[in-house]
Length: 284
Ligand code: RIB
Image 1 (cartoon, rainbow, N blue to C red):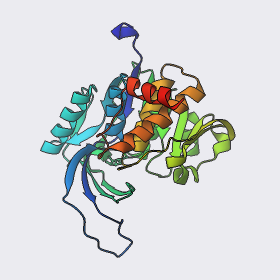
Image 2: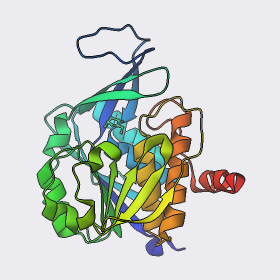
Image 3: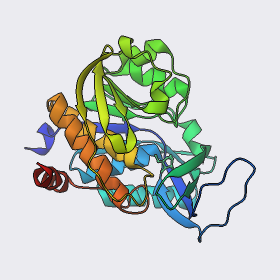
Image 4: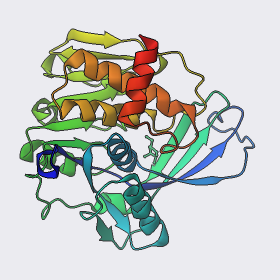
């Protein structure tokens, strides 16, 4: 396929420095636990999804906002190394976003995000017309998400983290992706396409509340679930943009999400399309 005929995807979302500490058990409210040394890793749901899409071979541009600081430049460099276009990145006087992440021995995590510069993202001068699909999440302002839903007919919205979204915005999305917790606040019967991820149990695709297709997740020895949902979203978008059928797109995304849990860090184990296909071939 020539470069001009290659479908183009924009990821509109957050870039964060992930400060990760591993511990045996996640602390309960009011509890202090001891962990390992802190590790600094590239993250942010937008960054993870853009890196994953680029690694899957999709022409990907990231639309995000970072601070004028060392972390912001580092995140851009990392994304460029993955093959994402960073020419639409904006800069703000606030510090680059930071996520404080705790991961337990079973690979489960807890995350608190300080959005910083992510909150200053502005779409006023961003041309979305060249993109076949726009993928977004909820670590940017609600106004950005509303604007995206108005300006593009092919918005895939990952409603993570769970925050209030106007029903009129949700019904304009081509696809909404939510985990089980996030899905509790959605009216599935009103959404044309909604995918609910169920962690190690796989995912279900609904259309107006009816099940379209369902995939069971493969059994894996997960070491770190941070970013697995982001890889799922990116992998689904990579199939949506080429009009793959719903069953095969969901199967591909579930496999990619599971593969992403096999190494530490949100961008530490991003599979290529060939690697996902090989995994699926072995499984069938
Ligand atoms: O989905 C995982 C991501 O959530 C982390 O990389 C962190 O930055 C938060 O945005």
